[in-house]
Amino acid sequence: MLSRTASNLYWMARYIERAENAARMLHIANQKSLLASARAMSASEWSQPLLITGRHEAYVASGREIDAAAVTAYMALDPTNPASIHACLQAARENARAARSTITSEMWEVVNTTWLGLREFDEKVIRFRGAGRFLGWVKERSHLFRGVTFGTMLHDEAFRFNRLGTFVERGDNTVRILDVSYNALAENEEIPHAEYYHWTALLRSVSALEAYRKVYRDHIDPERVAQFLLLDRQLPRSLMYCIHEVYMALESVIGNVSSPPMRTVMGLYAQLDNANVQDLRARDGALELQPLLRRLETLALQISDSVFAPRPVGSPAPGALLKGAA
Image (tube, rainbow, N blue to C red; front, side):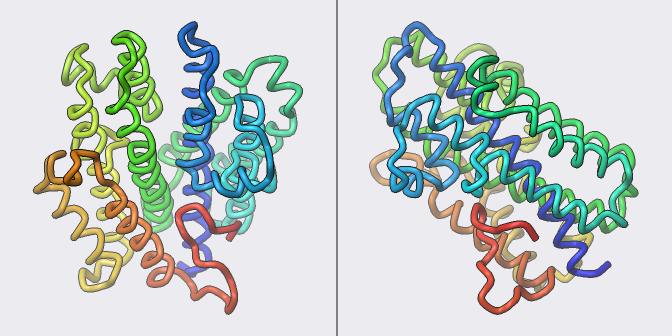
């Protein structure tokens, strides 16, 4: 397979996953804002989707208000925001179009109709109908894409590149959500029922609430939440699960265990395999996830540099949230 085509498949999957992750973050933030106890969510709480996606500084520099309407519009439909749902779906379509001869007609139809369907939504429509309908639609389209991919594509090298993109993006997102949200919640001294809701909202943001309850029943414990989202082997959105899937995909398409991305992913797997939550805490007891995020970013860079075609001179490095359409 041409490395250019492999790159298109990888980034198509990453952008679809990224759009869904943005929808999940906004959906939870909007649900929290509807609570009677959270009618006036603070600017710091509405800053969380911006911090998770690395867009906080750019947003503040633009002079916009940090409130529900402005943040939702920026993260959902703003084409100038490279982390917005609009920008991600556009980039996914461009990558799918470039790999049109490799993906199935059903996959192309899902990606293309999703992009065309996005035109039915604008800021006025979202305000009138509510953001929940739009964000639910984005999540459903992402689920449809993954289902069609799994059910219609040969499980060959091209399929592995698609899986690789999905789980690199998903693992990065799970760690970012915990990095921004966990310590703020752990230090929160709100009344018990409000605190309980915020912890369940964090679990819902990665579709892990029902799974958590099956394992730990109804008792929400911050340390168990961190353990579950980082180290559980069976949760599809845990970091451990994502790293295992990345390893399996890389082993299939590279095979050389001495290559930089293989060494990095095996090191990450070994670190997580022998860790518990206490190993990831700083001296003050806070959950310290920045080292993990840096290793994930290094892995993404190594994949792009070792597996795909060299980048043109002067082009930006494909960081976790910075790369444009391939």
